[in-house]
Image 1 (cartoon, rainbow, N blue to C red):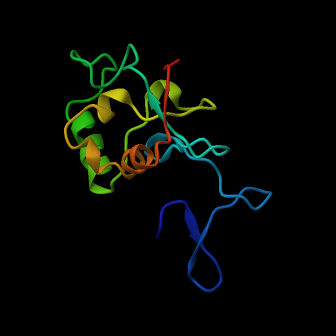
Image 2: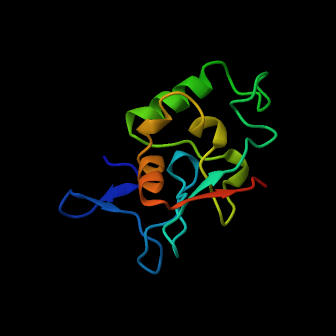
Amino acid sequence: MIPNTQPHQGGTPEPNLTEDGVEPERDGLNADVADPATGAVRLCARMCTTCIFRPGNPMHLEPGRVTRMVTEARAREGHIPCHATLGTTEPAICRGYADGPDQGRSLALRLARTLGTLEEINPP
């Protein structure tokens, strides 16, 4: 089954929708980092103080967790949102991820750079 879907009578998955028929917003690796009004892709201007890419594991993640997140993001041409921006009105791509090797695999970053719609924001 496709994530965030449920089968309906025909057995084909249908997205879970809110009461008003809109697909719900998502957090985590699916956070929408594009401004819906302008289409600009938000990127943290700097790493937040507890960035998972800082030395010393400031978020106390289990060993290998960051590697798995990066591997998943690269495999789907995605990105890692800054955890400090999740749940805010302006989720943004993590600066630590964007500055790392192979960040060019991120579709959002490639498109925003090509279109000139990359917007750097200060992390909370």
